[in-house]
Image (cartoon, rainbow, N blue to C red; front, side):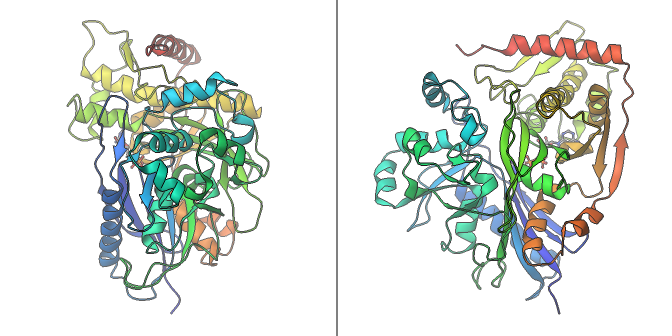
Length: 500
Ligand code: ADP
């Protein structure tokens, strides 16, 4: 009997999922949250051991749910929250400290110091990235400089570093493979986009020894990254053949394989990616250039990306820190309790502002409040902030690429929010389309693994799998849209320069 499924492990910012896909759809899934650790204002950490524990649990759970027997699963694909950095001991497997999460701003001083010589775009030509707290290179540097004993352990070869994909593959293969893929490596600020290898000059400037870094591989590779051990959580040896950062995986899951195709994922943050083909396109309007995916020995595909730090996490903040709602999905009813935002604008610059502003000195503000303002207006302004931030990056994308967006493919946890999707279509002035399978991140990881072993024969068979679920057409009058965008820009200006 040929194997029936591909297993995708999606290690996200707030939770870990394992989803089994057959040739057309998801057939079983399991999901577990992990703790968000906030030791100081601006710091965000995860416990890597907890993440590995949750990963094992969701694998076991999904295998039980789907009654998995030996030989049912053909391959494993991994996708992960990007940039989040772990340093661990290669002999014991123990992390030296908590993982520093992509949203963490503690590396601001390192970034400012590096920018003093050559400015914020000093490494952009080589890496596609502006100097910002978001990326892994400054996080690795911070750990090496600040955690007792790690510098010596790195020099002696005991300490090794990786993003969450490396951490999971290392654990899934019983410590046999220390690897990452080109998409994850392109988020470190240490990889040259042209050579797809760690860059010696960058390593010297960041003062990071090469031997602590993982080997960089393709995103989809029949040779893969070894197999899970026979006695592992899968209960047998299964090859790991796919590995992609979560946003690149969603691009693949949405089958945006042609240059000019794009998607927006609404999760903890929002990430718009536009496939630009086999040549990296440098942004002049505040986007980042990143690797989209690489299949085996084929040339890499690149993307322009607009990364927004805080969108779904703002809804969680309304829930957990303000107690305005009980569950995330309640935000829609609360926002619908008022007919409009009542003049309130919410700039959620909790981690500074990412694309297209890249201002780590920005902080969150709620502007335009009066005695009239109620919780409905705050909820509405929070949802509108997601759509308005998305609009800012799409305008930048149109300026960079010279191509006008004709429709936007959406996915992620917030894409179930109908009010948000309608408002998104309204402020963009284009159709917003949601596919039937919204777990596109996990789907992309499954596609990467499945393509490598011919579970799917080619890209066309994947394209046929993409089906439209719902679409939203713009309804807002142009004058109202312009006024809304003007007010939003005013609020953005007020949030800048708060950190002195
Ligand atoms: P990630 O993969 O980044 O962890 P998900 O794609 O699972 O994120 O999306 C989860 C996010 O979506 C959470 O931040 C949550 O607050 C938000 N969310 C979930 N349901 C809704 C909803 N109905 N309306 C708005 N936001 C939602």
